[in-house]
Amino acid sequence: MLILDFGSGETCGNDRDTITAMIDGLDGLKVKPVIKWQLFTKKSVPYLPPLTEFDYAYEYAQEKGYETTASVFDRDSLKKLQKYDTPFIKIANRPELYDMLKDIDNPLVSVPSVALAEKMRADGIPFMCCISAYPASRRQYCRTFHNLMKDGLSDHSTTWALYDTYTPKYYECHYALDGQTGQEVGTWTRTPEKLRLKF
Image 1 (cartoon, rainbow, N blue to C red):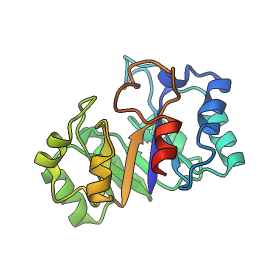
Image 2 (tube, rainbow, N blue to C red):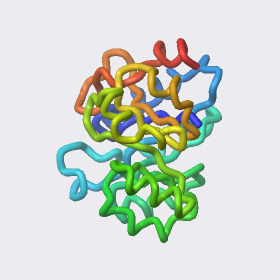
Image 3 (cartoon, helix red, strand yellow):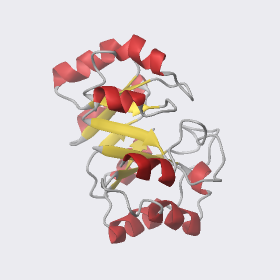
Image 4 (cartoon, rainbow, N blue to C red):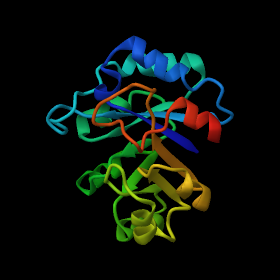
């Protein structure tokens, strides 16, 4: 499963035209990705603007035939997302949020350590290995998660090397259009052009 992280209100500016252009940028891919946003309140993530246009983003993606979901960073965001039909609900890479797992029927969890990855595997919970640095190096991922990335990978590296080596069941990368800026955009971000060359 290819999962594209569209970010929060920071990347799209909570602008409907920008959201439309981001989704339209996926035209021509041979693989149908899942669109994943980030949902949080100002209290849980004070340094980024919350996504206020999720309703529009969800509806437009549905019109285009894409499944949509989000990473949730707090219980209020979880309750909001549970009102939608989603392929999964992602728990952000914050172990203190894992207590929400008991309230989610279709979880996917980001894990920052081998111990947590092994626990999720033992419990039968889908997970993605994640190094929280932006960008993160291939070496960091391999040194930390070598035998676990085939289960799932949230990729903050700058190339397709990890994907090509491990072909994860769940593969997530950040996505933005050329020219978009902000804290969520950088060398680790895949553009429509980069995605079309791969998928």
